Length: 208
Image (tube, rainbow, N blue to C red; front, side, top):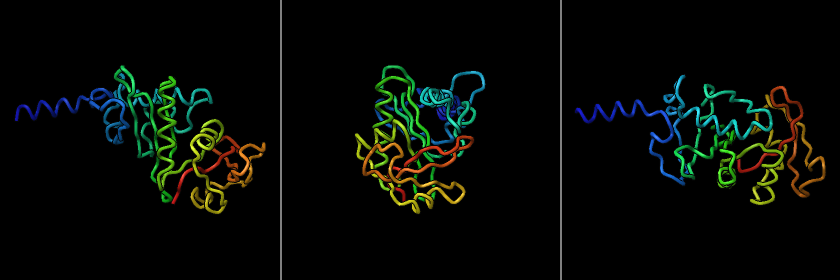
């Protein structure tokens, strides 16, 4: 009983990635309850470590729309997976998704800014997008990588895209890329994202 109580206290005090003793070089599913339980207003904790990866990835474009600080995690994003690939005891790449009626929508990514960290998140992205039920709206560099180097399928039916997104997120269908890029990939559209108007997107993957 004494040992059980000691182990229980230790579990309650586990706050950082390394405390959970996740294996190296393996993608690990992170329960949202672990992220919530790890919150520590003073010390660096799991939510801080995960947010740092998001912050690094989105800083060049002004930050992530959903997560402004570590206190915003996990929000309504219910599928978190991360990996530790180097010698330090912290996660290096992250993929976040939401469960939707059309499947699992990949929403947020993160990395530590290193090439291995970026490669890990890109590889994981492609791996998931090839699975039935996984999909994402993408644009710019990540869309080009998925289309050109991983041959990820796209949705070329505007009615299906609108159905997957929902009627409260209206799209303006373009079909071909407005600048003539990616010939034969006719799945481009624009839609508003918060304060940003007419953001160019394509739906990649395999929504239900």
